[in-house]
Image 1 (cartoon, rainbow over the protein chains, first blue to last red):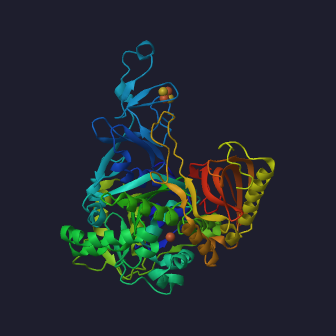
Image 2: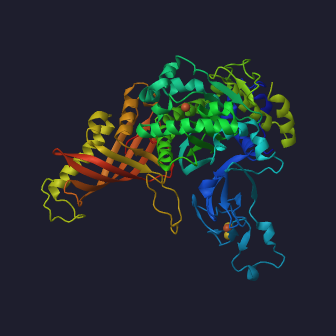
Image 3: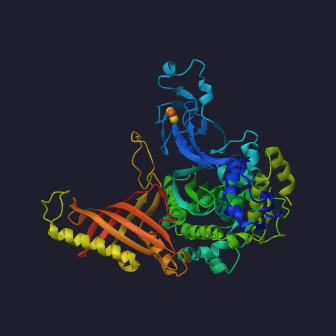
Length: 446
Length: 181
Ligand code: FES
Ligand SMILES: [Fe+2]
């Protein structure tokens, strides 16, 4: 660990996750430690198959603040490696996406193949010693695995497999990712810079049903329909459940949403979406059983630890790219099912952009809250005051015979946030994945 | 169209008096939006308005993929009349906390060109816009864009039928783009 903290990192989150020291959302030392202990060791979202469908397709993205190139080689295999030249460090690829066999550094022209290895060094035989070994200047590889076409990477060879890391979340993801044909993302992502700590967003999506009726009151009143019951936090969402998984992922689901969808989508897209869901529920039931047929027809908000979030109903997929302790970039794609008619996919994309895009009628409401959560900590006295996430404390971790993970009721709950923060705490205070795995096995059920 | 003889070539610039009318239309539009007169502004849109602000990716010049369209790419705005109506309704609920207290917003419109089209009732209008937004104590944003507009004469009034906004940021650098450009 490089940072020398002025505090004991383990003291910053109360063991049950319910109380946090504000410095975890503010302090530069904590953030540098996060880059090392959380971002460099977790599975992070990189891409989805349809975004780099052809041989040679590439995109550039970030893992924490590390720039990476993700590309499909001529062998069809997806690889990822650092987007920083091993000669003098320059950025190698400055395009967001495209198609290329090679990546050429602008500084001296070193050429890297789609495997991140040197394919040419100009004048090499004339200017480098005979012993110079190109293998030593291959770009650092990312360990890449995918789950149902969703591609993730980690820098830690000792991390569990992606499937193990997803744990119970994989079972829930299958609700739409294992629908016939599977799910896909529509890009390119929209991007917006916000002056807030990335964790506030991940927590907001993982379990904060509570804010919807208040923060988003204006948008709810505009679209109308059953969501009006939530307006001004007059009621908790009926039948909603919250889920929390071993490695910190979680979500809320409010079932029975044929009534809500028509108010989220407009005109005939609403009808198409309703028809689609109605026709799919029996298919999902057949394939995956009753519980996931129920969840298929639910509105979800969720996060995958550490920095990927999603909604179902409004079909958004987001990555919270950290840019320091007090700033992030929000990257947003649309998630659809591959077998949907093209017109429905376009309609869903439109709804996502209108609600959770950069000018989204809901998205805008969140950004300012997160900035306020963050920047009030500039006050030294304020920073000493703890934050609270005790909603539903003691009512979580209900035994369930039907669902694989812990669950909590009512849906207005901060159990998933506490679980997220405890996973964060475990990673920040563990030396390696063996320790993280051992601790999470016992700690996550407490 | 006002003064539109059928032998006018599409693409040729409009005469001074018509240019003045179009310029006044754009200036007034900017002022209405600055002053949050959203309903009067909405009355200057045609029913089939398409209001579009696409994402501009960083692509290599040699990239052969087609230019983004509303169908094949992502947008910040891809609005029809109903979508714009919703944005105005949201504002009017009085529950949009981020608009309260209000921001200070100013638009500066320039580089106006107006050209005849192959439709006697429509003009292509090009302009640039700088939008300054100042919120709360000290939050500042500058947004710069080009606009490719289609104006249509409807019942003796010019109306905006199409606006394609060429926005000059890739990562939007200030929290949200919830302002009409
Ligand atoms: S820094 Fe890339 S070739 Fe020299
Ligand atoms: Fe929200």
